[in-house]
Length: 100
Image (cartoon, rainbow, N blue to C red; front, side, top):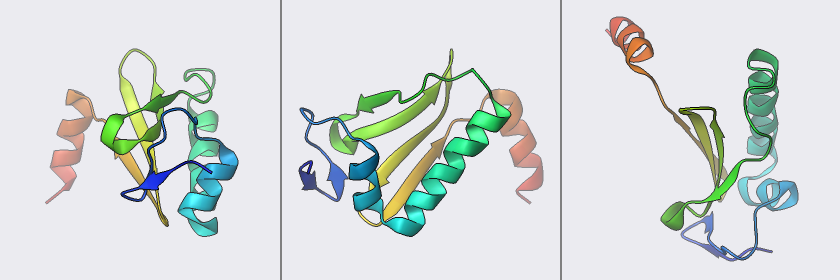
């Protein structure tokens, strides 16, 4: 299994895979992981490259969904899943109107 330090997959030589992710983030979070994938595939068909894994230094292996600009990044950690969502200017304005 990939080296875990700081609760992330930090062994650059060993690319993350489904088994590694499932074991690291736990069964409930792995179900969420799969649901996020299905949501993206259903709502954005053919837009993102499958398995666009990147080694992100201190973040270790991350799964990025990007076309010309980043959409979101999944960061697996021990017993949890982080999701970084990138909003464009228009989306950011919409979010700011509902934050209140």
